[in-house]
Structures are given as C-alpha cells and as structure tokens.
Image (cartoon, rainbow, N blue to C red; front, side, top):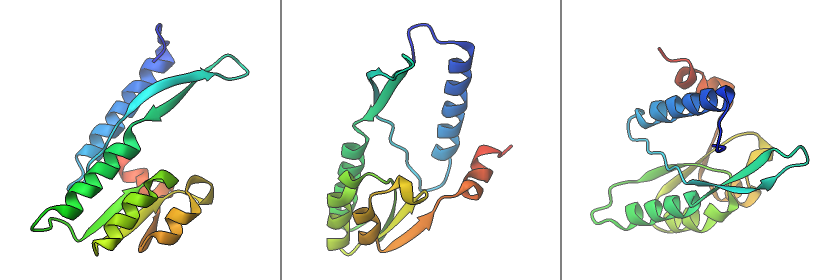
Length: 135
C-alpha cells in the first residue's frame, strides 16, 4: 500500500483480503502470501510492486509433505505459472506424488512447468465465480 492510500486502494485491499479469506476456507487448501516490494515506478509514475518469497515458501511446503513419513499426500495441486517452481514439481514427481498444475491461459505459465505436470486444470473465470461471489 502506498503511504497515503486512496479510497480505491483501501477498497482493493478489502476485496483482496476477503478473497484470501475465502480461499483459506476451502478444505485442504492453503495460501501463501509473500511480501510486496516496491520495484519502482512505471512511465505514469505509478508504483510497480513485486511479490517476494512465495516460490520459496511453496517449495519448502512441497519438500516437507513429500518427505514426511508416513507420507501425508499422494497428490498436490500447484497454483502457479512461475518456472522457478519446476524443481519443486520435479521433486514431487520423483517422490511419486501426482502433480496437477492449476493455471490461467497460455500467457500465464511457464511452458516447462506445464509440460512437467501430470495433470492440468485451467482456471478460467467460471472457476472463481463461486469463490468471488459466494454469500
């Protein structure tokens, strides 16, 4: 958030917080939120933020659950498009864990990640409708 958030900024934060809470309420679903870092400003002097730490947190989660004895999972769903997650995906597959890649359209994921996944789940607007508009 900017030092002096606007009404629109506060509304956007409230909607994001509500969305994250709904995701947290999905059974057997976990969400990892990293830290936003100011990367700079765009040509209109608007701040550009980048999210940090999420890929490491997810990679550690995957390493933990695939090495737990007795194993607590036999499949995982990775909601990412970040090619940095490929080593974690490959480690899960080597441990005989079925990996499903949940992804957006082709512009949103790394092709190697998509190729490596055992299963794929397209996340289109209909997928999120129940989460976003649930009572």
